[in-house]
Length: 191
Image 1 (cartoon, rainbow, N blue to C red):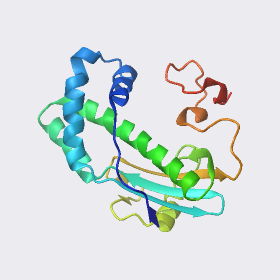
Image 2: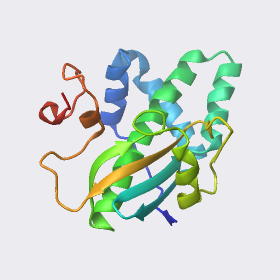
Image 3: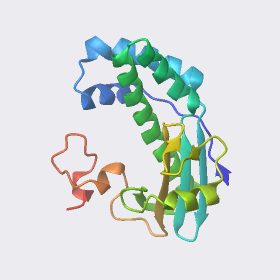
């Protein structure tokens, strides 16, 4: 198991993207978003475990149980907007972690990413067992219906290739919504 350097940082641009994606006004929520992010950083217990078997990358990552606890605290205090913003920040952090995984396989292993394969979407949920057996994560578990714990965790496969693809991979490549305002490279989106 290879653990990737575990520092993630969100920028002002990430905050603006979160607000835009969630149809929230910058002047109303930017300060609150920054405050929640600051608290999240104190509690972040990031773990990213990767292994390569042939042309498949196996990855499990988590933001840690303390992020779940913080969201629960907000919910118990009926601070639902804070819980919602935390969820949006967590998703953005996970997307940043995907970039770290992509960079790891390119820089350390000299492989390009063709696509992500997620249990329950592109591959069967049962594949989580295999991913965990190969990655051996320390801070993440799953139950009998393959629900990951902590909740802000992801297990996935990466299809790797040795030649650089014509389009640089990003998460938008797997989506068929060419009309999406957030699509990064619309020419590479699947039809």
